[in-house]
Length: 135
Length: 135
DNA sequence: TATTGACTTGGAGTTAACTCTAAGGTATAT
DNA sequence: ATATACCTTAGAGTTAACTCCAAGTCAATA
Image 1 (cartoon, rainbow over the protein chains, first blue to last red):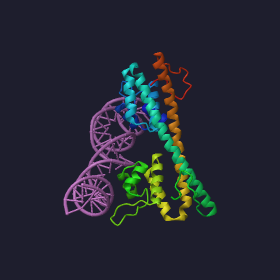
Image 2 (image 1 turned 60 degrees about the horizontal axis):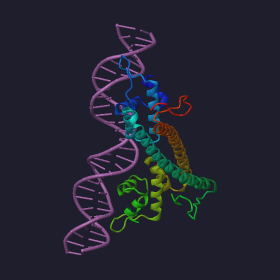
Image 3 (image 1 turned 90 degrees about the horizontal axis):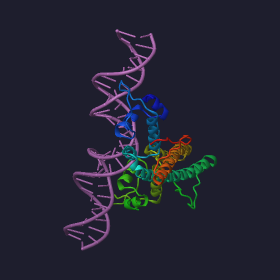
Image 4 (image 1 turned 90 degrees about the vertical axis):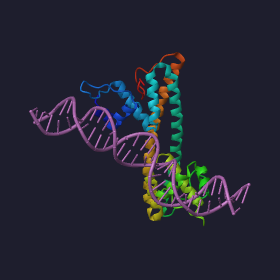
């Protein structure tokens, strides 16, 4: 598969894919006799993993570390497992922050929608919710 | 409340709070006669909102826009509401990406944990899951 | 009252993750 | 055969969001 095809498959730029390969976020991709990248099925799976994990905010450094461990062979399996578990915890923490923000937003949206209808802002006076009354 | 107290309350640096104020992520904070910031309850609510929304990846620019609208008065209520709804949609999209990554990680962790136990990697051959078999 | 530590501003520097540029090679349609 | 579109590398530039620095002021303690 050409770089262009992989790009449109995962919605990333060619520059990004070349950058990922250069810094080691994915293993090296085989070239044609002309020197042009030809992504194998495995390469594509690496790109899939990389873009998926990156989309979840997993830092490049962690992905590089993972690829390094992978290339060292099977004796790094438990290290890779630990790395993934740690990454998992981080993502759970981040997701919690998203949920907190959503809660706050939902409250504010409700107040504003009510204001658009009735013509006046009515913040919850007892402040029992997660949100501030003002702003 | 002093800048230091606000910092430890929301776990951000003084530099960050001063930066937020300077660029308009929060409205201007009143100073003491000596020129030192003294955060009011409302200021603190603004900081709470800002840090909460930033933690969810909401860009600075959006927060600045929100504060601007707020300062223009009540005729911007529906615009503020629209802004929050759009932000909400974005966060839902981002959270979906987190869930996708978590799914992939959980599968990989399971495979690796099994490998640590049994001594060999057993990727799901029929590839019915969201994940790649290799990597 | 002197020292210590925290505060102020304006502006420069840093970091992660791309993104672009230059100079040139490859592949395909006319 | 040549134009066009896409590919290559190395390295420089960009962007968001801080983070640090210098030079000076303020406040609490010994």
